[in-house]
Image (tube, rainbow, N blue to C red; front, side):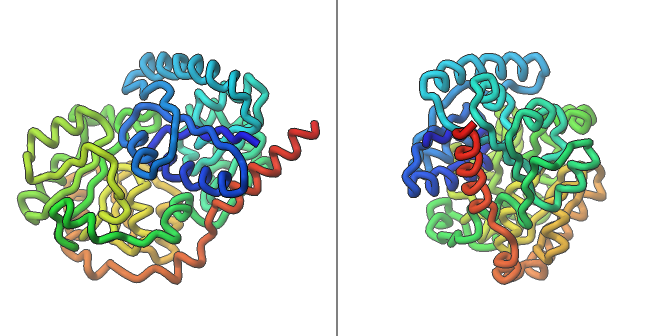
Length: 358
């Protein structure tokens, strides 16, 4: 069996890498496609996993997103029509889902973002099966989706690569970092379709400037900054110089998170994966994220501080200053959560068997 996996972001690259390794160990063939965006390609390079780069991110405008997606569909069609995979798996990738559907390749989708409305409309209806965290179930129902073809698991996708992860301290010396004397910050997805209504409220490439001022100049902490876009990189580099370290290549971020004083994200992924390691973690995402509240209720040190006012910045500073009081051993709680990998692999095999007999 040839399984086609598509990854559009660094998070998806981590997840697809885990899925690929399991499938290969079971004797199946795997084709991974990705695109030029952020640290995504570097994740596959870091873990020595072959991936075919097809297309690139379309940017901020609707026209750019559409043009890039259409161009990527054509390139994917040419590749996939030749390779003829048996099943397709993605994290609701519009371009790959459309190509798979057009070529009658069964589709398994993974998602934890009910709020990504445009993407969900283009992908969810085309899937044989959708796998999502149980904590998002009510949001899918509220959005009007029939959930008969959903499979839910009692956890979050980040468990797939954190559950057995052992942090490596040697990366700290390579980057000249000291334990608990730095903060990891990931910028917001300002150009994403679901961020649009919030992004209109500020003109800067990132809304993190006031917070960075506080951390760099008031708390005098080292900052490891992971931008999503070139304009965010240039702004932060120009404004803070060597006070802020900006890795240009993919690194084992999870080890850096493990020894951070705190982790802050304009999205949720690195806040979730660092909280799963017991690190005080903050998401600044403007709206409620189901997985964040799920983990908070379970006892993980994760905080949602919608970043809209100066008061929000002070809340974040207060958490950083009291970080050691929030840091905790979460190993037992982590074991109580469901790893999605067995469910994903099982669904891949079930869909392939079911569709091959039709």
